[in-house]
Length: 532
Image (cartoon, rainbow, N blue to C red; front, side, top):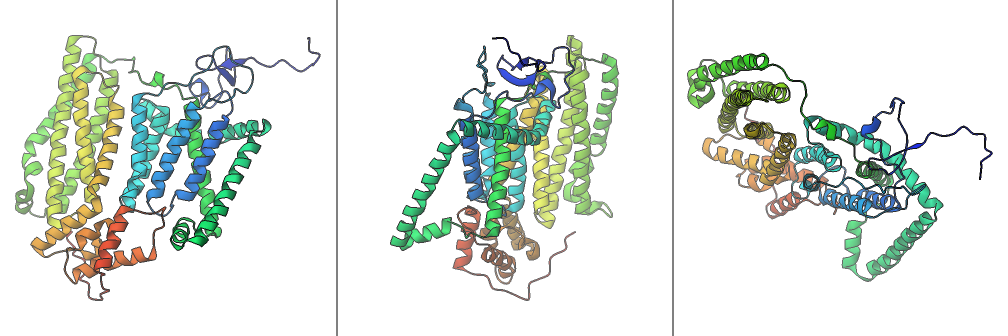
């Protein structure tokens, strides 16, 4: 039939990465003016019914489970619900919206490293289940944002990883309209009414039978009371915020998995090369400078306590801090030099490959000497003034940087380092999870209590600001130091009781210890020891 409509003809629709139906216009001779261009056109059809239902259900779980003011088991429950929602969104097929494509579109196959990033994200979000230190939980949550982005986007090179991290917030903004279109299609086909009816029947059954069981048994009523929060304006606002945040994050993740960005073009090395002498001469001079510095400063680097005592006006604080800042400068410089050389130095001939291995390998080895020196300095500093959270983080960063340079040396063996950026991030994630396993607040408290037993010097004001994880170690102190250190922690725990969402093994153990021997309030607590 010939149409009599006088409307202007529409452009043909472009096919997807492997021929699927797309909603983006064909960019044959026209310039691509979209924000992300062809690298990330997005899915060509609305979200499937399974995706809309799974993301919505995970949002409800997050609203009911996440404690916004602390870590706890609710974060782990939400993480597992989010992973389950993304799995359902990926494996459950949806009805195509529009004409059937000639070539069925298939999402890009997940690589094994993405499963590892997913597991790391769940592990980071679950740290609050066993630890009570708020600063540690915040670090884990921030790191989980990066590992979660890598789990759904990929990217092997440094540029690909950076682009994947930058795409995450944009994916949330693009994912919400995509879910809304899927919900509209679901409502038009009658599926929305069935989903609403199913939810309503489920809620009605739970309310009726739950109320009957609660009225029949006091123990069950207590369980229900501990699970169901008090309904007030603050609780509803928290539910709405957690639901919207979870839907935004999971919707963006599902959007990325439905049509992952093409980051393959960012994984290759640079095509532009410099001449051999143009890079070899400056870097050789830099290596000589590093070697001269390390050789002259051996006494400074490894002098330890003797060097501090023999140098007029030098304190342990100055000794350790100078090593730390020295490490930061050298590390940043060396990483930039290695990245530039790996990208632009020629390696076509045997001479080129031997030269780049020898120059950059020597530079990395000299940096490892500075890393070892900085760790030694921090150890001397901690033995003298005690361990703190900042000093623990500094030592952890130094260890991680040392591992980074070992990875750089390993990559220089074959001059192929496509795996290096992801390995650097994986080393940082493992370092953070290892710190969580070591229980840093308890480690700090235990180290300071041991130091007090040897020197009779302790800063109870600082120790009282540690989290509940430190209670078992601080319980070793005698009065009045025990009361001064534990009474503030005990009062914080009493003011902030945990429900099931905020349950944490660290706080539970602390409450058990304090219940056996409650600390007393004291007005005669010793003043903090000003070591620096």
